[in-house]
Image 1 (tube, rainbow, N blue to C red):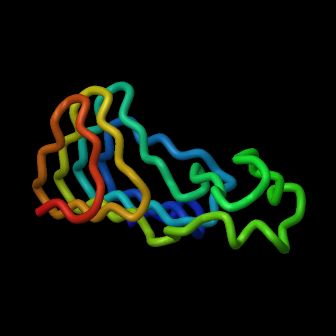
Image 2 (image 1 turned 45 degrees about the horizontal axis):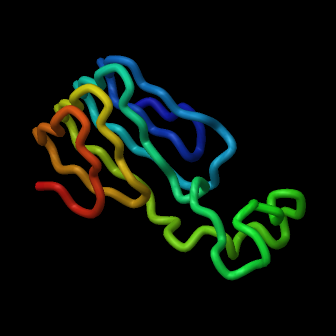
Length: 113
C-alpha cells in the first residue's frame, strides 16, 4: 500500500481519497475502494473537550496539553473493495471490513462486517 504520510495509508486504485493533514490519528484505506462525493472521514481531532470552561479547543495552542482532548485515538481502518455512498460519514476509530457497502448518508461507528 502506498504510504502518503505516517498517518495516512491508501491502497491502489482508490477513487477520490480525501485527507486533511494535521491530525495525529491514522486513517488506512484499502485497495479498490469507491468513495462518492461528500464522504467524510472524521478523526478524534474533531472531538472537543467537555470538562473545561468552554468547548473551544484551547489546548491546540500548546502541544503539551492537546493529548488529553481526544478520547478515541484508535486508527480508522477501511478494508479493500469498500463502496461508500454519497454523503456517508465515518466516525473515529471505525473498522470496516473488506467488501462492505456503506449506504448514502450513513453514519459509521464501530465495526462493520
